[in-house]
Image (cartoon, rainbow, N blue to C red; front, side, top):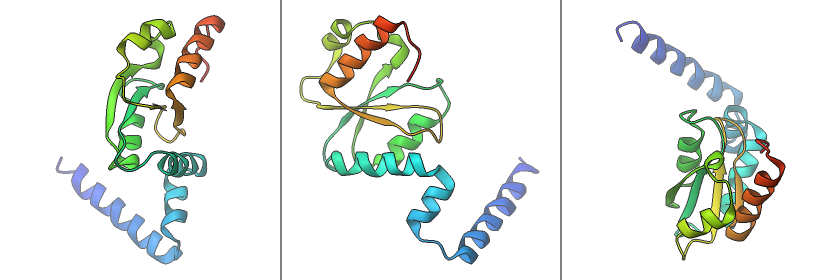
Length: 139
C-alpha cells in the first residue's frame, strides 16, 4: 500500500495533465480510454433503453474480468438485474423459466473494453438456441 498509493496518485495526475493538454471533448476522452467500439455500443444501448427501465445483465466474458461492472456503471441510472453467465444457458426453454416477466431487454457484457450487446428478450433466447446448436463459444 505504501508504494502503490503514491504510484497510483502520480499516474492519475499524469493522466489528468495529459487529458487537459489534449483539449479533447468528453466523448473523445471516453473513446480514448474505453475504445471507440465500446463507447459506441454504450451510447447505442443508452439510446435504446429508457433511463428508468431495468435490464437483465448476462456475463459473456470471463468471470471477474470487470467488464460487467463497467457496463453497469456506464448504463446507470438504469438498473441491472443479474441473470447469469452466457455459458451457463444451454437452451432457451431453460432460460425462459427464469426470465422475469416484465423485462424486455438483455445486455450481454464481455471482458473489459469489449463492446456489450443489447438484445430484445426474444432475440436473446434465439441466441441461446443458436449457440447450443452450433456448440459455439463464439460471441
